Image 1 (cartoon, rainbow, N blue to C red):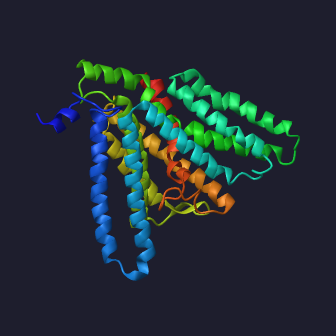
Image 2: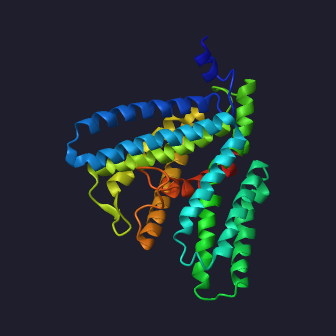
Length: 339
């Protein structure tokens, strides 16, 4: 047996990557190689009048290489690296969202606390302290932040100011943190041990990483597929005042195709094919709603993107807009029904 087959068979592993997660990462790389070849072929034939479109297409492709590379490198380095990566991304996302807060300069004392709450929340995750991870932000931080704002003595637009800070924390930190939290789901840890010991069929360990990659591939794949279906067959906008490019044809085609993709990837999860399909469908639907809500925020603030951290994609929160709704729902559905 070659070293490649030994690695993919789960007889050895690096960091969080082994078995199913290695196959998923490998598949993502192959898909990117094919996408890069297609984009290169298309852009080389476009006229000069399409130079801006060609540049954006290339930027988007290379941005995907960077994102998959960063996630893969963190998984290879281990759980701590994954937690640190998402903590940093949450802080960058908070900085992007802070630019949209109605009175960020006047509320700077309250906003500064976000830089304390964020690493503390991820520390609870790193410690596997699920009880505090689950309630720290929606209970303690939720009550603490408006109290800090009230102590400043400013009552003008107090409700909208407090709600804006709380929403930024919930979306950029709490919701995003459910992606790395998938590494710690009880079913992932138990099923991974069972497969590693040979008492359950499959390709080996790495179930936590496989679950995380499964969600990211299906939800982000749904975004891409909705774009493709929308550009190909899209005629009827879902919410033209919010996002005119999102069509019913793109939505239905993208979600159904991504659901089929999730069903085909059932072998990388503890689920049966139909369970993987149901969870994929729900996650993709939640991802669409997340994108719609985040687009509403940008429309409200009169901007196209949250930032420019990712060339061709905008900011961190432009890329996480689907996952912030999908990840918490996927996590709790798996934890409730499969624990």
